[in-house]
Image 1 (spheres, rainbow, N blue to C red):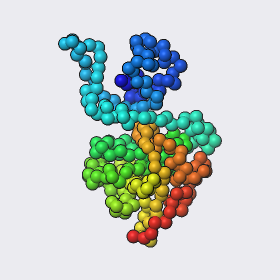
Image 2: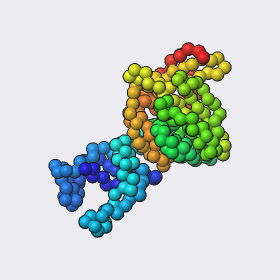
Image 3: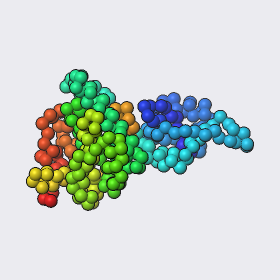
Image 4: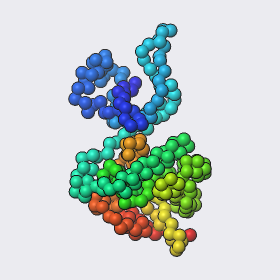
Length: 286
């Protein structure tokens, strides 16, 4: 049995690791439970989509207990509910050291990035396509719990096995128009969309499995060169970013180290996607 104490956060329910609560023993007694009986005490933080509840009928009488209306969806969600919090202490240190931008332009970019990420989440969630923060957007999450104001776009990752041609039509319906299709479904696929309202760009990098690694590709159009960015295999966790429930690699630091190297904590405004990443490899020509 799962014992969950749910707290409202932004657009989702959050629950904590009960064993991190010094008073959890006394709280279990109040609930007439214990660590040794049938209750299973969750040992991790988690995030669940908000759901509607239905009153439970016991012995023909409706009691003051609720159960999720869509039980199958709830059970599926709880199996993949692990949540990690952004390190706000490190983010404050970073912002104090480098003075986060507070200009009108920077605030506008943050607002537009959130709107773009929200629309992307609506489209991909409706298509049951898992995605995670990737590249510069993931770097901003790990380093400063925020979007990087000079990055100029939003980056996400998707496993190529989850690709669906319906993405393009559904993005279009939300005023996100396909700007570039790089690569092929079998090799180095990358899609770029532009938000009609803000002209902000969304890059979707598709990831492939190769042995015990994942990789995504890049294409230089004028030369036909292909590039490969290799990562250790990773698992996905939920987090809160810009007030939205989104996924990141659970071991976010290892993911970022692969892409940005040991100096990932230092802002770099001049970045060449063909040579700057630590994990980039030349991958032939088209």
